[in-house]
Length: 163
Image (cartoon, rainbow, N blue to C red; front, side, top):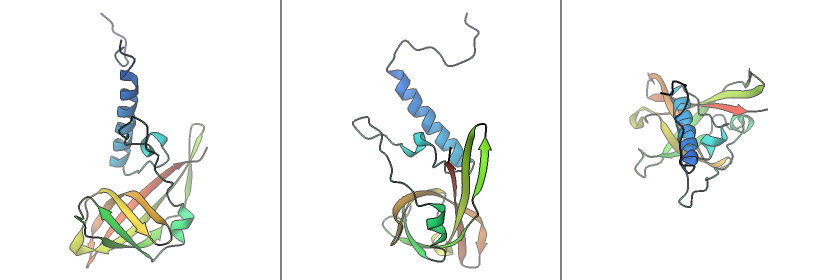
């Protein structure tokens, strides 16, 4: 009987890439539950797989500075719950960038806050954003707090690998 801790040994070499994809998917999901979009993780940014088995590389996201230059502008959002109806959200705040160290690595983190109408509340989900200057991109958006009057606030959190 083998009492060593660790993953089970596989005699199938083809199972290793599937396990790596699963671990990358799991890490992305756990990070999303913790409130981080983990956009700096290449494993997460390359998910999902396309039919021929190669990774789909997503376009780069706008930088913190690009978002900061667009405060008070409107973004059109199309998410899975929108059923073809676009929703306008206004970017109201971009937090200051914080540099954090974890062992030998440095990460930059910041968050952005949007406001939208109370009549069209979104659940947390990945949404497609369209903006005339920043283009089209996807963000994981989370509603935060209770609605204030006729406005609901949403947050997207960024953690970007620097070095």
